[in-house]
Image (cartoon, rainbow, N blue to C red; front, side):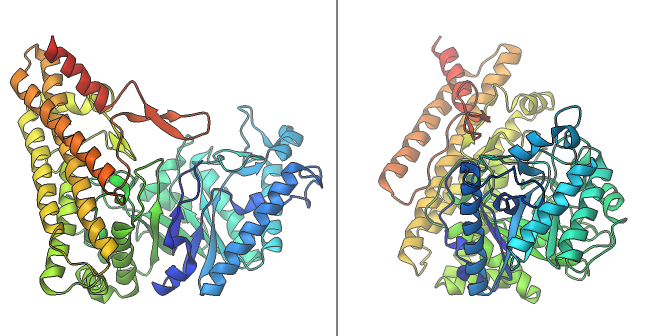
Length: 550
């Protein structure tokens, strides 16, 4: 199945993957609809309390409009021949319901508490009302730990996992009974869970996963949905050890527009790493990629996120790199005998390539994975601040990279770290040269291939020279000796890279929007993360520019 994950609090993402006919053409079975208006926001709760959404109220009109949206999504999916699954945050309930029944559903901290009997009763009635109103809905995808309310003005909610394994089991049993047994629908319970209560261990800890799930009776319509990484979609994070364990079938989540890696604004091929294991994974008997799970009877399928994840930009208008990742993962899932390389070759043929064109395209794709690892992360030492750059934001040594830079200095790895960033920049130069001679059939894609390669060249030049300035300056802060000549040279190169990047954006309409040289900041008044103007690569570099001037 596939999902377009729009940015919370922003307009819905424009993508061909919103069209279920696109998914049908790629031989998908289902579409996950995620507009951050879960299906319980499209029912009135009249079976529980008619005061919640009284007739004629603004709130009821909003719910009724949401009903039409859900109906239309189901109609379009079924017309294309794919199932309609709905992304569902738990707990999300009407504000008015919580106000009217606060004494019976809230705990001492003011949270809606799943362990209270009335809360469970409300959820049972809610699910029955959902499937009574939408009998053709095929199932639900459940998320806990992150409750996005930006698109639901009349609802409130919070994380239901307040008592680790006990809370997960309680919720899964309730959902299994109401969704799978009573309604006969499919239930995908995501192990991705954040927040307090210890429930976040479900996403990466095999022992905790089994503690939760082994007591749940398997059901043919109950599947657990698990990211292929043991945490978020980062490189250098191990393959998820919970995959292939326990009693229940599992579907694997794969992000095709990686939020920590420029979101398709530059090449970023993940198909080989997802299927065969990323280069940084150690060799050995443990699974490294999905290919190692093929013979495991618990491995039931793959859920791609064709678009989205994260917040803000970069924003793109051409889906070339999303298409490559989606196509390879989907083709391999349908026919694992192809292998990842065979799936890649099939996509290349469809794009009009053969022979040398295919070989160059594959080399470019694999180089993008190597360049991303060395530019954003590291192949030489562990990087703790995996979020130092994410979405459209570039962090700095004034906050995000402090611990990593301390560790680099303590271990005497300054030259190693900076040589690796220089190597990444050279890789992206080669990617640019390859892009200029790959004859994709589609003219818009051929142009975007070249533009996006240059985007990556400038991005990782900014990273390289930004690190040179920041890490050398950081070292000077510790010992009082600043390498002024090197800092000055890299300041000039840093400025040149930004000028080239901005010219690319101004000259090429297909260019993705640029990064900001600021850290990922807190939520603004609209519930959307913004830049932190006081921290990041820009303020860090400017500090050392000022020191050099003095």
